[in-house]
Length: 133
Image 1 (cartoon, rainbow, N blue to C red):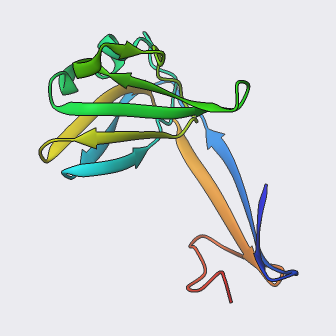
Image 2 (image 1 turned 60 degrees about the vertical axis):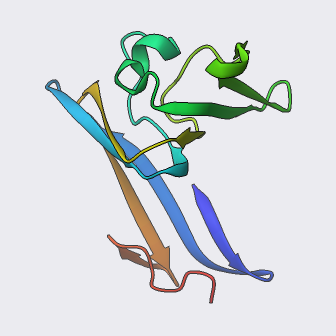
C-alpha cells in the first residue's frame, strides 16, 4: 500500500495485488530512444540479462538498477565490460538506455497487476486526475 501526500495531508491511497491465472502470456514493453524506466510483471524463466533481454542484445547501451541492500546502483554496460548487474527480476525498477525505438516482449505467466486508487475514502479503478492536490 502506498500513500500520496500533499504536504502533510494524505490525499490518496494506492493498493496493488497480482491476479493469477494458469495461462502463459506476454508482457510487451515499448521503448523510445534514450532512457526508459521499466519493470517486469512476472519473474522470467531465466533471469540472466543475456536471456531475459535477449531480443534487445546490441540495441541498448546501458542498463541500471538500484540495489537496496548495498545502497548503490549496479549496471550492465556491454561496451565497457561492466557487468555488476547480472539478472533481471520481477517487480524491480530498471532504467535502460535504448539506441532506437524498440518493442520488447517477455513471456510470462499471465498475471495482471490490479491497482485500487482511493481518494477521500472512495475507491476508483483509475488514477485520480491530480493526486498531488
